[in-house]
Length: 162
Ligand code: PNS
Image 1 (cartoon, rainbow, N blue to C red):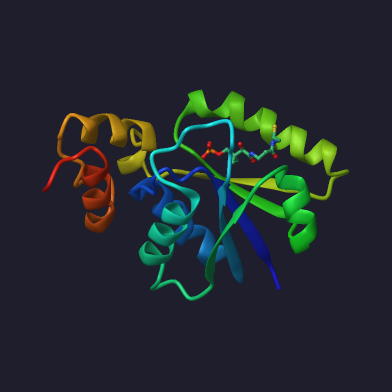
Image 2 (cartoon, rainbow, N blue to C red):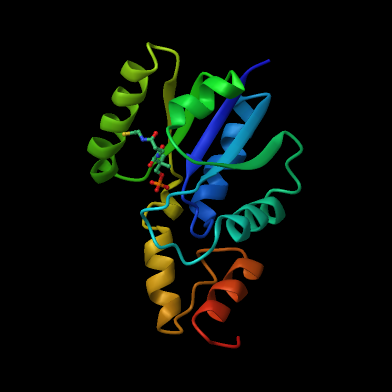
C-alpha cells in the first residue's frame, strides 16, 4: 500500500491545501494530513480546531485521515512507517525554502523520507493562510479562498458576525 503524509500548519485550511489533498489522495492509497503542533508559533486556531476543520473539509475523501504531530517530521514519519511527504509549490518563491526542508528531511532520515511536490493549481497560486487571515481581519471577502464553514470560523475569531 502506498501511503504519504501531507504536513503543514493549516492555520486555517484553504482551497489551495484542499486542491493538493484531493490530488495526492488520488495518487496514494492512503494520505495522512498532519497538523504541526508548533509551540514557537502563535496560531489563530488551536491544533484541535485545525484538525476538526480539516476533517470536515475532507469528509468526502475516504482515504484521507487527519492527525497532528509535534517534533520532527522524520521521526513522526518513521513511527508511521511512511516514506513520502507531500508539499505544494505555488510559485518559484516557495522553492528555495521547500527544497531546503526536503533535502534536510532526506539527509537526516538516511534517505527514508522523500518529498513529492505537487504544483498548486494556478487558480490558487496566490493563496496563503496568512493572506486569508489578513483579509478576514479587515472583514474582507474570503469566499474564494476557504470553504464557507471555515470562513465563518475565521470571521468569528476576528469578532465579525457574517
Ligand atoms: O504549512 P507550513 O507551516 O509551511 O509547514 C511547515 C512544515 C510543517 C512542513 C515544517 O515546518 C515541518 O515539517 N516542521 C516539523 C519540524 C521539522 O521536521 N523540521 C525539520 C525540517 S527543517
